[in-house]
Image 1: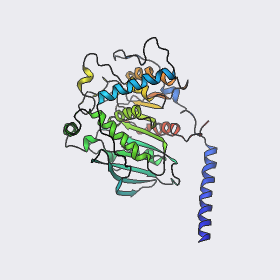
Image 2: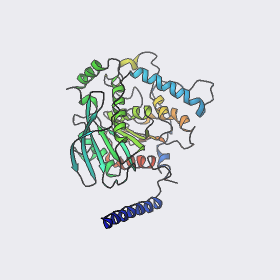
Image 3: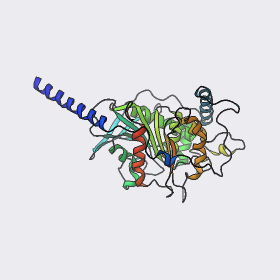
Image 4: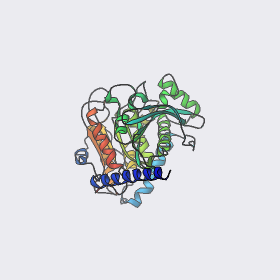
Length: 370
């Protein structure tokens, strides 16, 4: 028995030593090396003039920004509408487990709203030996009837497997199902079910609520460091990522691919997002305010510029540009930008490495880097 304990202790010590040596030999940089390539270089846009983020004549400082930030946050949440307090339990039921080459993939179910349950895939990299050691992601799926299966690598081509790709690179990844495919046969049916339960809540408010609940769950997976949680999504999932990062400070870095920053850039007026109120004369909100709420946390927008469904591109610069003064209150080098690949709406698989690098650098361990 004593010999067994000694062997286990020696093995654990060796793992710690090897991990420490690797950690010391390959520090994570403070910024991605290609940050300058994705920084705003122009603000030409057909969008209407964006409202100022702070009162005219007021000197912008960290101290003066905080009350204005809270004012914007409350205004947006009032527009989005109320949702009930989330359940406090963070346990989940494992419905199925599959062992892949580098990842264990679990189909799980957890209480999402009080009395309501939702399914998700939890992807756990092999080799996560220590509690609270791993970075984690909420990976939000795009519009597809297959919902969480492609992003988790269950179905579809590799260019759809973003969540699995990131799990294979060391992230614990939670891929939750959007309510639009949980609560009805059609998108409009799902909205009707939502309105019956929560008449004053917009579809986007429900998506934000659900994404925050996903943060609750993944943050409490034993091997996850709750201070190193990020978000990533494409299309519908990018819209959810924008809102999640803006309204949940637990998200320490985010990547949103082709969600559409401008309210006119895509179908933000759909009943499952914000509705037609955004077209009313004098509607005061736009998404440069959400970019400012995300600051100073790292935020990368990926745009496809042109073609069917393309929602981000050169026209997205003004929203990031407007938020840069807020970023620069904290650091002269603002970790925010637009990677405009110009190849249309789909996220090219060639950019998966860039997504992984952004999240690896900005979800690094405290003290890691140079």
